[in-house]
Structures are given as C-alpha cells and as structure tokens.
Length: 157
Picture 1: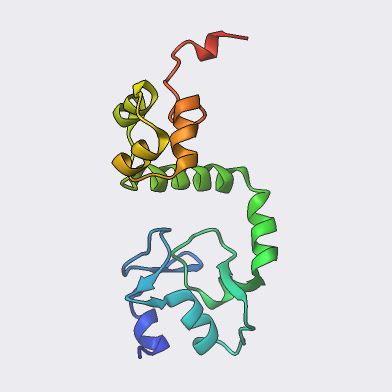
Picture 2: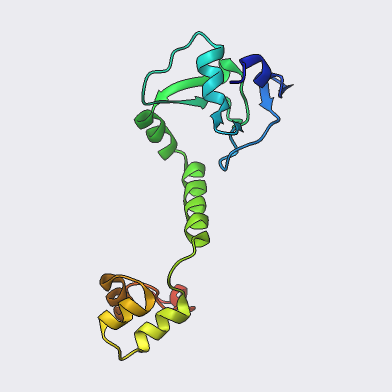
C-alpha cells in the first residue's frame, strides 16, 4: 500500500492546488492502479473520516487537485443534486454517454436494420438470424428503433 507522502510526491504545487502528475482515470481524476488517490489521501492523510456511501469531491474545480483543503465528503444524493444543476456537467455527461453507447459493438447496424425492415421472414427467424429479442425485431420493423435518418427533419414544423 502506498503512503500519503509517496502519493503527494507525485503532485506539483500550482497556485493553491496540489496537481496530480500521475495517471488519470476516464473522468480525468487521479488514479493509481485500482487506488482512488483522492479518497485515499482524504481518509488516510487527513483527520477526516469517511462514512459509508459518501464520495470525496474537490471544491476548487480542478479534477486533478489533491490538496486536502480542497476536498469535501458528500453523500451521493447531495453530489448528484449539485451536479444536476450545472449545465456543463449535463452536457459532458450526455456527450460521454453518447460516446460510450457508440463505442459498444452492437448486434445491429443500419444495413441490418434495413434488411429486417425489408424481410419477409417471420419474427422468430429474424430473432435467430440476428441474435436479438422479439421486441427489438418488432421495433425495427415498425420504425421505432433504427430509424432512417431524415435530413429534412430540421426544416419541418
């Protein structure tokens, strides 16, 4: 297990913040292997105790800052309600979710959806052929899922 001093030696003083120069997780927060660096420093380095279900967040706005004075423990519900009010966080979250969804290798693509729509096979045959459930086959057939892009949709009112 790392010590707090070892972890803080990987930081650089920038203004009032201690900026982590090590690796970051997918959210840009300090991470060292499986260790959540901010939580470890908050609980082991400070005199502060963490209650179960609480998360450590930084108050200065820099996600890489590990200054103990810039950390605060909050419940998940309090954290979510604060973040939900921030339009930038909403935009980042929706962009991140879109990126995640698009990166997943799905069973269907637009060509397969067109094939399903134009097919005369039964629903059960299509389920077996494409490895999807009955509700997805029906949603594609009725146009509720995998709709054809309509380039003129913005012009209609």
